[in-house]
Image (cartoon, rainbow, N blue to C red):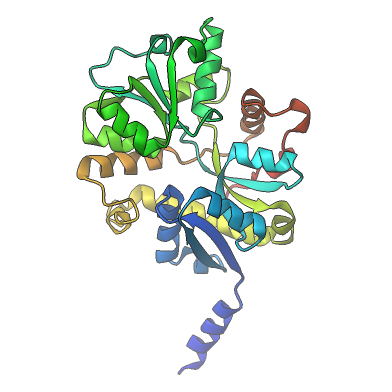
Length: 308
């Protein structure tokens, strides 16, 4: 009577292991935790090993050093590693770009309304949102760097400064923006996706992705495909199983109801579309806009295309 269970266990023990470095309270942890809790890794013939870390540098170091097979990274970081001679395969995770947040009563509604204002930027001078803002402003003959007061700081500090009235607008990461909206009294000044469209780019570019060292990804191509398939299943589950989000609430920082609903909806809204030639071309154009040399862009084959 024990033969079949023992055989099943042996088969599972022979399954390959995929280790992913993930921020303990990062948004990717939400879908990866759901994936493991539903057994979607084992259903796809592998074991997912999550390696929580405290901060982004630690996550990048884990995948760069080989202590983890994969991590979540920004497209600009992947491009910088490619230029440094360390190529990574890039599997889309999210198309959430960030947001420009203002008070509900603010009269800021367009890029031109930011002239002469106090603007906080998360992520420093290389922030994609800040670069896109400046590029669109330049098209309108405006120089936000010269005409506005700019302050760079961590997202929580910027949120506090906005609440205290020390800043008129902040360019921040999408989940910090969602928490502000959930509080009430704060809104998006305009859609960041509109900036992409103004620059002639696809509105839903996957700017965050799971990254794997290219050499490792080539050797484990079937495992990467299994991971991609289980991710697609996890995203479908999170989109339909509202109750599953209650289990994730602690990983989300136990937000209040308004912030919880906003975080959930915007996470779902960020699910990336199918990767196409046009979208890859636009990702490469975005890299050029953000400072990459046109002659040293990531190769097309580094953009993961297979869709389950």
